[in-house]
Length: 430
Image 1 (cartoon, helix red, strand yellow):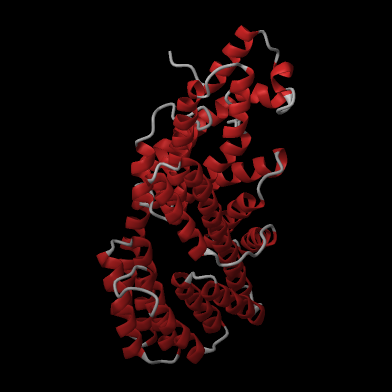
Image 2 (tube, helix red, strand yellow):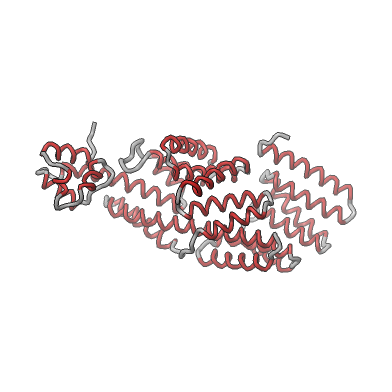
């Protein structure tokens, strides 16, 4: 079996009759020699040269292993940086090519976690769930609490995407209780879990709980600056250095890029949590405060390069303004929200439904029907049963207000049918 760098140093040290203290004298601490020998730390080229001189051995005896380890670590860090940028297909290819035991400093569990995350982000939720569950089993066996929390957080995210809210609540509440009770963890992790719990309670119209979690998510995280362009440059430098065989420089830039992408992801979570707080404020009667928060979120999205998220804030503002009977302003924000979406985007269903509801309030029945027709076509095309339930409810309100009770009853029947389909989609017995 091929020896690692640490094993080679240890074997030679013992053969030469040195203790760890004697080998470290004048170089580093004995503890550092111990870490190097156990492959928990990599020596610099200068330190390795000094160790080789003390052990009266050509440095070439060690260099192959150092380069091999460095290459594997830089490959993993490059894959991680690519993943953080959002190129999940490329990251899957890179991660899948790594060995079962890629490096003494990279665990198989880390690679499996990253693969699961990538599959989750490209929509392959079944494959992601299977990988995450395997990771969770391993984390439980090793009693790695931080890893358990991270994995349960991701399993909760998948369950939310599948609209399986009981399962999502199960994983996220366990993660939240564990991170709050047992460990002093990364505030961004706590904020992410709190944000997702807020979304679940908001979906259930449990506003007090939703507001509590959203406010915690906002409070535990701090603002940072838009540095996406720098991160992109670092990633390209990492790729370039790796292609030229300079793995040390590739590792440096890949780590830098990965850190910046993570910061950007965290910033986006902060703004999303703040926006959800604004929505809850508006929907619970604090309209002015809610609008102020949402306006601030829109500015932050634009300033930090998240313009694709701006449409959701316009839609949220429209809902709050509608509740305050500011119909013209609500229509304006609905139209702005539509500018950030594609014509057949499922997100447009709620916007068209809002426009239909506004026109219904103004007794513009023909215009209301035109908007709700648009919403129905998109929901039906996407097989979105949950959205169809809300769409047919609006149809029923339009017909009822006009005194067309037969059409209203037909809409009610369609709504009930869509509700059954939605429950079946969620695998709930009815």
